[in-house]
Length: 515
Ligand code: GLN
Image (cartoon, rainbow, N blue to C red; front, top):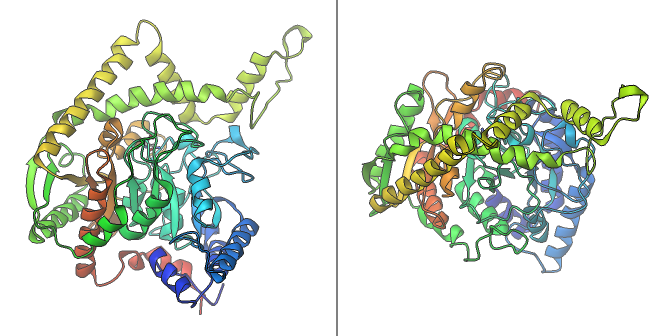
């Protein structure tokens, strides 16, 4: 074990330490790599660690700083990246066997922007296969573990990124959120996760699950850190045809402003349909306390109704498999990754291209991926298209209308992020519906493209595990989620008297043996 222990400083604190000359990027990056070496055997947040690349980039950052030529506020701060984003020269598997051994020849725009801002990349984080799941148990490479209790899931699909940040293996990480995969892991690990406005972050090089929902975003320990990271990766990209041209709002300013905890004049809508039945009592209790705190801080709290949200989950599980089945057709054994050549060929002939494709997809995809390909192919087939896919698209429009009406009454909407705290590994993995229900509250935002943040709201009484509040804002009003998120974070910090994460029991286990 390293004598240093975990580096618990936030990204902002690290930037200050760099600016004052108190430390170097090489020191910070080495400490993160040491921590990964110490605890990742137990946490399994990473699928690939790039020690040499991270240290090389850290040294380059230090040289820039010494020459007075820093590339921006996060220059030198190391980061972990979800394995669904293409990284030049670094393996990218999307948690799937079918991409085993694939090393992309290019960087996703998000990754290129991280590099251009000077952030050393520590490695690639674990995820459910092709981002399908809420627990990382669908990863072909085995699950990640929740730093609060190693027998529990860290959420999914981006459980690796959340676990890495919660276990102090990385100060910052990137996740992707198609139905909740940034926000739900944040909620169950006591971290911050932001799903930006759809089109606000480039999807170029993000391997598509459902391209009309997918959005990359920050995974951090504070709201201000998330705003700084969002600033680095956000903004228009000509390589993504769905990228928004309008400038990203002033996020860092909004997060700083929110930190005073004053919510005077802010209208907060509690969504009636995102709560009650199906939500754990402890989750609801912490949510209600957070709403109360925000009321005391001057917010005007109203209840809003979004009746179509009760159909959001069903709608998502028609549109998502439809898009996924089409996106995953590119894994055909011809272009990248795994290729399985069956040895039993008909009539002694060589196996055909179709035989190879069939054998590769059979061996390369896991059960959940196959389930969704079948579901999506069915929903899109002629004769059923109108009844399923067409209907779902109509409900999607209704969800957007409900959001519009609700945002007429409130500046932001709030709900619990996830219906329960972290469940045990193995508990839901064989029950697809139980797994899908984890995204009950996060999916409406993806259907409509609006931004959202999950902020830790405390520990549920029954199990002492973290739970989160979700704050949603209208499209392109991402600044509001940062302002209100930072305010709630500040109000709750006063109650807790210290970082919530430091209370994680498994973390002290992970520290054992350290001096
Ligand atoms: N859990 C959801 C699903 O399985 C969300 C996934 C995601 O956001 N990538 O589809």
